[in-house]
Length: 212
Ligand SMILES: Nc1ncnc2c1ncn2[C@@H]1O[C@H](COP(=O)(O)OP(=O)(O)OP(=O)(O)O)[C@@H](O)[C@H]1O
Ligand SMILES: O=C(O)c1ccc[n+]([C@@H]2O[C@H](COP(=O)([O-])O)[C@@H](O)[C@H]2O)c1
Image 1 (cartoon, rainbow, N blue to C red):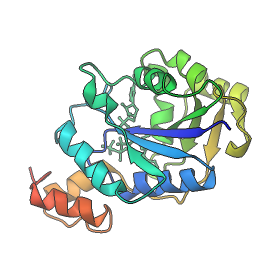
Image 2 (image 1 turned 120 degrees about the vertical axis):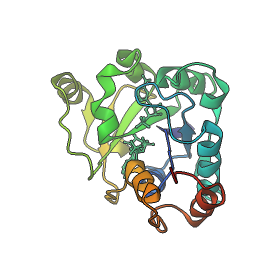
Image 3 (image 1 turned 90 degrees about the horizontal axis):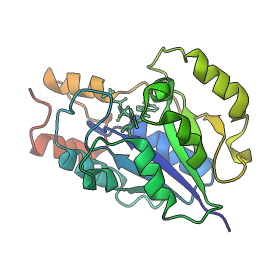
């Protein structure tokens, strides 16, 4: 029986319930066997994160502890080069059977930036793409992506066919939460409780992160 594996990559600076709730709902609603949260080490298209890759990894590990459908994958921390998603997909693909489905999960903002990614036109050869709504991101997709969606999208993620090649938009509880907002709250001495899991909240305070 073919497996269905999801991959949610991120900078996770820090991980928050916008990531976690979306991940869990996708995993449950679309019958994933496993959803991997994959922190990047050297984010390709943004400024350096505020805290180390090891600390971002540890926060994600705390956040998913005890949740069977979610796990953390540290392969991007084990590569000493920019964390290009094409490399991550290829290395995951090499561990799966040919008929297994690999789902690259992206928020709407990340999806809109796809045409600037390293070897972006190859991505759909190795995975399907699932796009999460992002209520806090008012961005328009460039024409090249609108054309791609017209050619490759299916209405229902349950109907994705084969191991790769299609795009689907998912509905999940909309949570207008970003790591930028959390870093800002912490830098201005405000409390981020309930925006991150309690274990992550404790970690941030124990290690005095994001206090500037
Ligand atoms: N609240 C959210 N709802 C849905 N998807 C989200 C949400 N927050 C982040 N994502 C998605 O999760 C992935 C990783 O996001 P990332 O770690 O950059 O978090 P972020 O909150 O967007 O961070 P920052 O504010 O630092 O840019 C991206 O695909 C992003 O679109
Ligand atoms: O491969 C690329 O060129 C590429 C460019 C930008 C972002 N990504 C990946 O997309 C994911 C979301 O990125 P971000 O910046 O929203 O955290 C994360 O896993 C990044 O490493 C990948």
